[in-house]
Image (cartoon, rainbow, N blue to C red):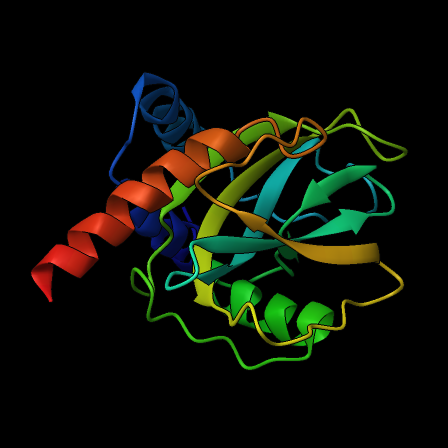
Length: 192
């Protein structure tokens, strides 16, 4: 295992599973990382057929809201994020994607600078059919601020209330992410 893959495996091993499905996804990812160093997308959309993604989920914890964009290729409401570049670490990718897609310097002070969540998902849409191993980072947003999404990636963006989230056209793991996020925010708030 090369040093970058080993570093990513350490990050993945540090994710605390929220439920049995996430526990399975973490174990699957660790086994995959142990079996290959070919973990970065080299050719769009699907070479290799499983590769790493970092989400940078914009959250306003005070307003209890999350910002999503209508992703042009996937045809879903998604957080900002994207594929890791070869040799890139997941946190660096989340920081880069926040800048490229939202035009902001990411602040990882809602639940910390480690990924909150991990999923393995078969993609949908025009470039669907491959597997994304996604590390979900939480970045601070402000519901009162307008965010201009990259028009090459997104058609529109809007805030959704975490408590009342009922959007069907989103990442299939998004409701589970929100449940874990809510739990993490409550723990962080009670520790203050």
